[in-house]
Length: 335
Image (cartoon, rainbow, N blue to C red; front, side, top):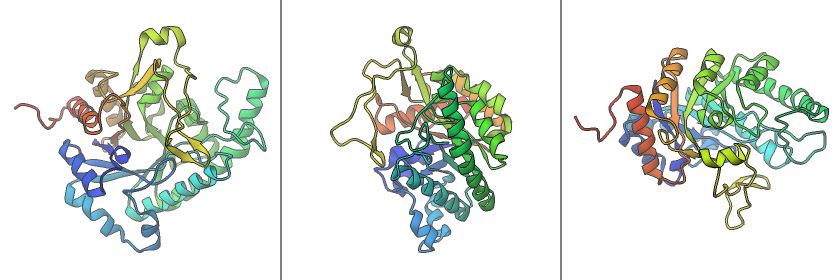
């Protein structure tokens, strides 16, 4: 098993600085952003595609730091009806697959995307509980007309470049749980599309990530390590479907097109936390064991979004938990 970090949290550092930070935590893998919602300060996509930078030159700092590049991440909404955001994210995904092929990297992480509810719609629509016939009709349109043709094309591109596309099962996307992941694979006859197993979004949906791994089996290609804390007292009142987000007006995070990141509810019913702060080390041991049974060489990369902990503080907590759960020694452990 290859334990590492998704370097989006380290975008304030140079690539060499980020790799040094990963090594200092006793980890050996890195997942680098390649487009989508976030910029690409650690990956010169155009230089690699144009030949201005050779794969060997780009990968040299990884070898020098003792870090393996285990995946590229291009999370975004490639099906967004916004004419600025959707096509740009789709192009980023295609470029990421091509760059991965050049670098010899066999995993590209992304999201399935979310179209509008109907032809001509301007806003993505998540029809998650289609008890009403209009919602089911909308889902049929989203899948049959938009998603399946797009993902069949991506499957062909990934196969041509020898790359596995690993979809994060993320709410506000057509694929958000094992059933919808398997639906996409089956509808596209895919051999190069599977899951990036990120447990954080499964936790708050009430899904046991270990059971999800066992259900998906060899469709799990890659994994993230991100934890979720359910705030039980608040959740008892409002449940996990919490819409009390608010707009950020002062320098919001841009997500493509006209979209920005909203502010999280102050008294939220659940929060993303560092690995070990939502579920104990015993759970993470079971999680890693389940992944190991699928693929002993699977990469598991920490994604840090715990707003209660600083950059390195959160990574240290997560790394220590994962290393202990794997049976390894973490830096700073007493002999």
